[in-house]
Image (cartoon, rainbow, N blue to C red):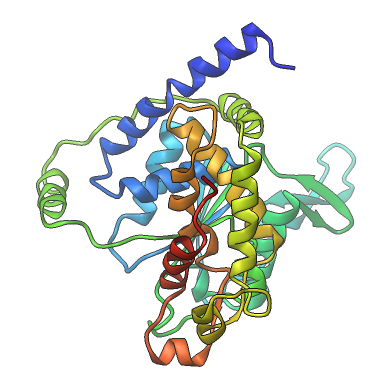
Length: 331
């Protein structure tokens, strides 16, 4: 049960979220939608996959966010020769100087941080990808029979280049499903690109102030779970999820373009992300706009397009757009 003191505390934390976005905007020009979606992933206690061509400041965006959040940050550059031990850590042989006895000590890898940037995850083979995804799911690492808990809060932001670029290992659909959101970065507008050129080629360097601590984020994650969502909106989410499945939908375009649709995890993700977006916008109840906005990054990687759709250049975003038109919210 939430007391008046709890409510006051939560309101004070929520009021800091616009300040957090302002701090990030000191360094990152534009990309407001992507920044919002990354913060939604964090508030909903999930992980996100960030896709964009090189040079769109993906790494700088994540690093700046971690600075404004006062949380530990690690970056892992994924390469074809990266091994699982390079991510989770490995045992090293040490010697006790007093007794002379030798023993193995677990040396923690870069995965042990609040915010971990898995840069270019699709440039490393499946074995190494799987080690990262296991840590994401379990929020712990098991090595030589011992279990090591990862920090709390814990956020993985994996970046990838578009699959059509050379030297990539596409993530399988089952592993993609582990990401709460699949966020796409677009090129900046002409004015934003002009601002980038002006702000990044001089001697001035913006100072990012720390707005929220790890304890604050844990409290906000707890608040997200308490945000109100009406039964009608939950029913709508359920209908949207089921409408993505060719075998259970009446939508001809889904049957024509999709091999299979989203599973129950997509509905859970959409509910939690809608609640997190409400908090990010200083509300304590979900509205239809939250669901309409987040349906794209939630469903984007959970709908498998068939060969016909690929041949006709039909994307999963187009399927979601049609679904939102065909399955409107209850009045």
